[in-house]
Image 1 (cartoon, rainbow, N blue to C red):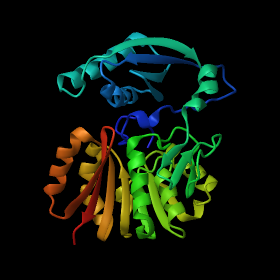
Image 2 (cartoon, rainbow, N blue to C red):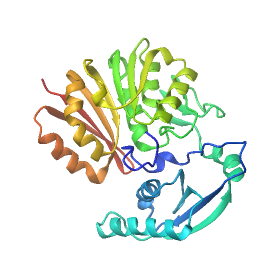
Image 3 (tube, rainbow, N blue to C red):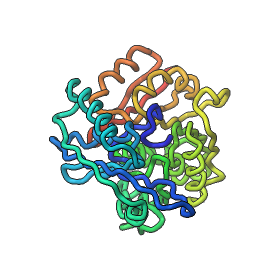
Image 4 (spheres, rainbow, N blue to C red):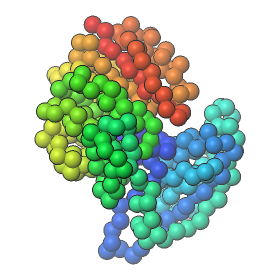
Amino acid sequence: MQPGKPGSGRPCGSRRHLQPPIINMQKKAQKWLMLSARLAADTDADILSHVCFEAGALGCEERESMVIAWFPQQNARTLMQDVNQRLASLLAAGILQGTPSLSTSVIEEQDWHSGWRRFFKPILVDRVFCVRPPWEKTPEPVAHEIIIEPKQAFGTGNHATTWLLLKKIAELGAALPERALDVGTGSGILAIAHALYRSGSRVTACDIDPVAVENAQENAAVNGVAENIALFTGSLPALKQERFPLIYANLQSHIIEPLLPDFYRLAAEDGIILFSGILAEEEDKMRRALDDDARWELYEITRRDEWIAMCVRKRA
């Protein structure tokens, strides 16, 4: 699912420190609108990134006490009004700690194109995985390297929710099943990690964004697991008969909840679903949604930054 698209279901925030635009070199260099937000509280960084992506940002970078977001060139005043309205609603709801100070400036596409790569660095998950772009080297020995080409699809390993699920894959280790489903695969990072760790496994992966599916196919090939991952554009209703002993779902909670019946249908008996993409402040809401349905057993919650992952087992 493409980052920042309203309704995409992908959690927004620092995981997308920067996503490069698709550049057509045959056209005249395009200009971009850069929005700078000085935070009233550092804890607001993820939320502000969320707001920027929902307002149409193509990329965000979190710096010390600041969030920088890049938008296609547009009327700066209109953008500021949109962002300020979204922030005011969050502030009134007590979600934001304070009102950030906003400013905008225009940058050339060539400045973006030459500079965005420096924001992608290798991400280590214990000594099991290193997620890195092709131009970076693994800083220390690990069991598996995952090479991800950052494009317009989510999943470069930067964000806490991706890291939480990668860590869970490492923890499951030899217990990883042969078959798995990755819902909202983005760059394909979780499906690739599963296929690398569990040799000979078969992962079905889907996304509603065809750009993401194309990106995931490319990444699977680069990592040598294209034959182990079956990718398609679509969502859970397209899956009919197969049942999966393990399902990954790195999605926002408001997307997860209405899909719970589909997750139950697709999970094998005693199957495990790893939900991520859930803000810590939404934990109680998700607990209630699961508790209201006796078919689910929530057996573990893991945390990183402002995000949580829920490990759920399907009851027979």
